[in-house]
Image (cartoon, rainbow, N blue to C red; front, side, top):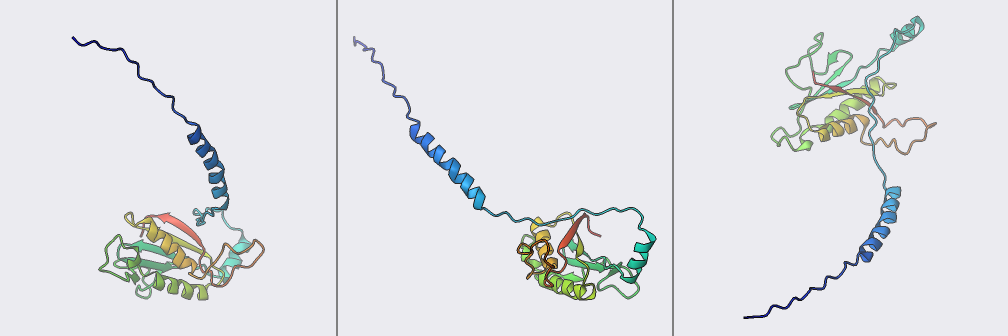
Length: 191
């Protein structure tokens, strides 16, 4: 018969000091990285509700007709409306909801290809409308339920203007003319 020897295995304690040193070095490095990281944000205003306007303000508003610029993002393009008249609709007819007023730039492209929308034509339309109503800065943007968020962001960028740089403007400075409609209001549902 064999004799079993009761040998105890030596278990060494784990040395966690190097791991702790790395963690203590990472904390200040991460804090420093957050200090220099710049975050971008898009300012979106909710729809505004107001009390009945005073008679003086009504007289002032009668002189300048509001533009009521709206962009609806559809699967097959953009529908642009202004002051209850859809662009491309027959004269005297408020809306023609059968199709978009700005069709897709790449109709055969896959739905996941965000560049299939014609952002350049939308920006050109926004420039044209800005020439008509120089004081307007608000645009209402709405989309169908299956429109990706990237398309909504690119639409906001197009109606704001590709040359618009609002981050460099200080509070008391005037908004540059290349900034078109830089105050978007996002509404639910298209139509």
